Length: 80
Image 1 (cartoon, rainbow, N blue to C red):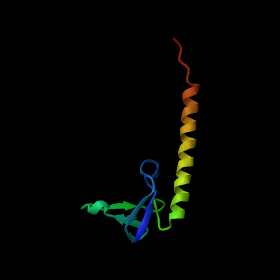
Image 2 (cartoon, rainbow, N blue to C red):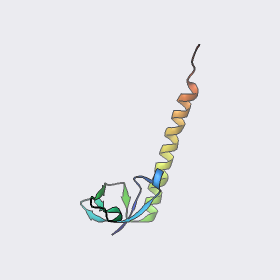
Image 3 (cartoon, one colour):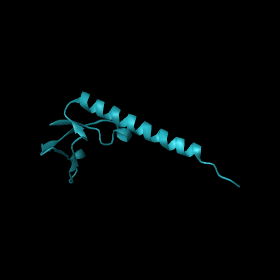
């Protein structure tokens, strides 16, 4: 079955893969590798529009996190 993986979407984008689905997990053998890779609920989708929605949510969450980090860094002041 074809799935869209969003687990690493912030670094690799949305990945389209062929997988075996069992009990809510998607098992993939990327590039025919010997060892399978499992993706859990919320990390993969069967519809591309759902994957895009999830990826956009992940981007928004990451932006908020980086903005909080930036605010903390800007607030840092060091004395001599």
